[in-house]
Amino acid sequence: MEAQAPDLVLLVAGAYSAMTERLERELAARGIAGMRPSYGFVIRAVAAEEPTVGRLAELLGVTKQSASTLVDDMLRAGFLERAPDPADRRRVRLSLSARGEAVRASALATSERLEAELAAALSVRAVPTLRRALLALIEGEGGLEAVTARRPRPPR
Image (tube, rainbow, N blue to C red; front, side, top):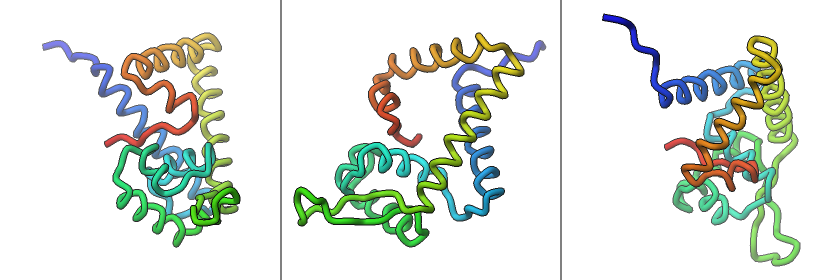
């Protein structure tokens, strides 16, 4: 029996796992411990719009209680800060702490390195083709707006 190539879903899931593990290693090498994969999605959403906890829940597709628990964990770990909304002091907005900004900068730098490594391993034209294919897949499933706003939802 001939070995069958992995299907597309397995390839995309495997690529996500490989990139997540790479990010974790790079953060650990920079002395940033305590990160969980879900924190990365929060960091991206908070960097994109400094949401309230309720808005963060919407962005992540989770309950307000789940978002609140996640935010509390990230506050304790030093990745986030809370501040009153200047427009409405009753509302509290989330922002990145210096540690959260360091994670974000490191993740973006790692992403750029991964893209350069792919371009070197395949071809300069292969990466834009891969990007277009992934964007078409995401758009077909209705997730393009969140991705282009740099606040995709975590996998369930």
